[in-house]
Length: 142
Image (tube, rainbow, N blue to C red):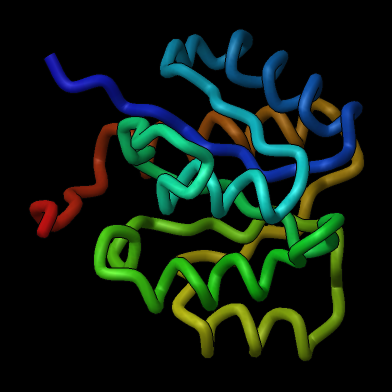
């Protein structure tokens, strides 16, 4: 059976907890791996942290991150053969149009602004899970 991992790259503990609660509420039981800064995300994805973990089915990527920002994480992912096709959903509070444009220019698959209300946020997370983990077909690795 395929293990579908979700990599969440987020430094805000409240947003991480809200996401976990939303996954529970939506009965999304996939393993959630959290990287709290951009460098940790790159270490995980590119195997520079010492081990080579299973690649996630989808990456939920915040833009405003310590060490390496989300746009640079996305740029490096798209430049590497192992991660260039991984689905990346920008999940951010940024409503800046340049962030939106740059995200798509760098190869983001989706750009979603985080709703402030928990019920709306929960609904967004459930829809993300349904689409990216069940409905979406990914290309073969390699």
